[in-house]
Length: 191
Image 1 (tube, rainbow, N blue to C red):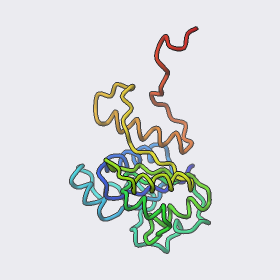
Image 2: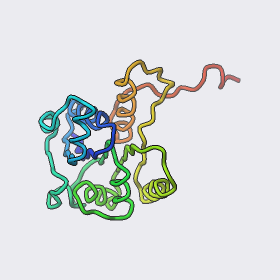
Image 3: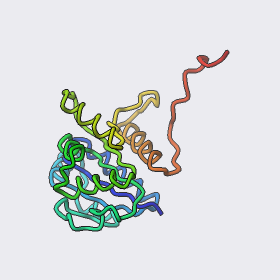
């Protein structure tokens, strides 16, 4: 059983965190969930899901102020952390070592221990400061993965788009999942 830390911050795209939580539950993973207050507010605007729904899917549920929890330590062994969605504010805190809440602290120790940290950064357009932050995150070991749709899958619904991104996240975390992968353009590689 894999142990995954999942954090949800206040950016638009709460469906990514919710769907990842649902899939992790289906995969019988142990999920340690941190949800910020802005995430709960945005979730109310974007979805019909509730905090209770999230709590029922997670094995452990934390407040961002719970900096004394086990997941705040590098000695807590886990198989990766995902922040979905991830605000630029949170990304900046992680990039510059400002671990003043549990989300940033858990991400900081994830990087320190050389574990996978995947950030579904939801911001556009990006100015130079944002780009510098994302480059810094990549250089210190984070996987910066804006949830950009892959249209070669010919998605029919928003769920198709969300599921493709979430399945790619699970693939990066080492889960054995199947999804539509790029196969090249027919006829281009014959020769």
